[in-house]
Length: 201
Ligand SMILES: Cc1cc2nc3c(=O)[nH]c(=O)nc-3n(C[C@H](O)[C@H](O)[C@H](O)COP(=O)(O)O)c2cc1C
Image (cartoon, rainbow, N blue to C red):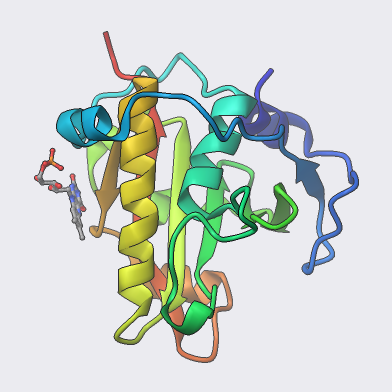
């Protein structure tokens, strides 16, 4: 059973990863930070993919590496993407039918922030419902916040290219409702949604 299924069907057990939210916690497997396709090859085959195999779940290791590519901490102790003035202030959530999870990249874990299914607020296109993984990016609604999100989703595109996953970044979402549901404050808002999954054969 993979992480999303586990999170969906039975919640999760609090492990070593302490959360700032005080919610349920799911430790992710350590991402493999080496190997994969040469970066020039990954850039060369990168594409948006909207056809997912709805019956093939994304395993924990792949989910962990997807999240790490977007917003993890690398072997240099740096985020996998640059941020203006090193503010490291982007937020990354994973949406599931039974709740929303905050990705703590420093601790490589997911922390549950609510029990709501927010996927319908992103599902303005039919294919969204077939995607096994739903990433939601939030950032400061200023000059740099959207740049940070762009760096993160491009990393996911490159990881997906290397791994044979399909992904697409999406702006057609109810970002105002999602911002409110997540209780974002201080000029932060939901910016984009990214679906990830194995391509339909
Ligand atoms: C900021 C942004 C928002 C996008 N929003 C959507 C979207 O809501 N739905 C969608 O299907 N594709 C969306 N896309 C994907 C684009 O349609 C896609 O990148 C474009 O058609 C080029 O295709 P390619 O990525 O395969 O090169 C978005 C892309 C970007 C960069």
